[in-house]
Image (tube, rainbow, N blue to C red; front, side):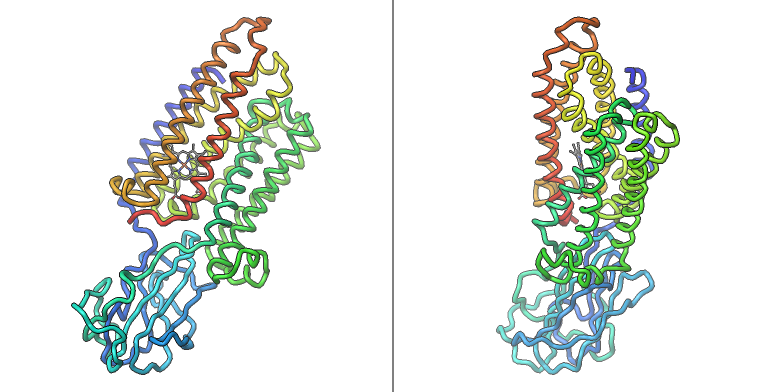
Length: 467
Ligand code: HEM
């Protein structure tokens, strides 16, 4: 790839970024409980037949976990929840006949973005002796008109807890580990595929190269399966090992998450066929236009599924497109770097290095530029108030990631200038091109930093962004 091609690539990326920004409408809210009937802390004059929960985004009923307990902590049976509106944002939960007491309804639902959300609504049926002496009345979390005649709130109860608990629920540790596996495998599979198809077709003849691509595919498939299982276990409040139990996974079948992951699985199967052809046809396959087209469809298909889950999926088309472009940039750059470091550099063939390294250097430059631009667009979509970057855990983690990206860009620039000085500008046959230690060191540091960035991102996507 020549510098003119890189300049064209960057110009294209800028046009895409400008187009995305122009598209951008108001950011949608993250899935949250906007109001409930009864409201949090309401004192009711008559028993409600049901509790109505109004969410800002569509919720899933499959696998939902709900419980109702009275002031003594006794659990009461609940009816199955049902949607109260066609847009699936309102959920009605039928209550049993209740006597005067204080009640807490705890709920866990799978949100449209694939995250498990949980929270609670506490209310009191008048006539009960308040467990805590009433203090100054506190407004319910969101004032809503009474849903049922005779159930109007006649007051509010003092809170046992300062705020209604609400937030993303996850088997945080295991989920983050699976995401690291997921993103790394994706980079190996897709970035490695682009590396072999576009930069180093001779690599298709090398058994280790094909094996690493298969490992990437297996890792992606495993991570896809575990994502579904861990979400199902998290929703049910079960331990990590239950994530592989078919009866637990069954709980979330039919949800949007399961559907998107099924599409991902389908594109991975196409990816397996593409790799099968590479294994048989080797560099002949890598040179064929049909093979490259099939590989592009499989790779883009897999990457697109990431835009339909997670925080960006709830923010509209701009954030979804930026997410896809971000992922393409991450995968192409990181996967290429992994193949360059583990497959090309150890062969120490000067003629090969002279061709492959400058080509990759240009591709990596374009990919990183695209990744950073799309990342910035995602940032403005997911965190509309930039001030909250300093005041929230999500924001601080994102700032840490950006700091690491800054260091990474400096190291990448070092590697690039080494490549230019020693491998591009040095005339053929000049053996100053041979010592690769500085380049190996730079790409090693780049890989290590990339792994830390991937790890911080894996935690980040499991947290609730600031509202
Ligand atoms: C200036 C640079 C960057 C910015 C501004 C940025 C910003 C973001 C934002 C805002 C998200 C969304 C997080 C969420 O869903 O809550 C994200 C996701 C992500 N970022 Fe970055 N990022 C940058 C660089 C990188 C780098 C260098 C890597 C890889 C080493 C990376 C890998 C990822 C991955 C894997 C995701 C998850 C996407 C998904 O699961 O759909 N990012 N990034």
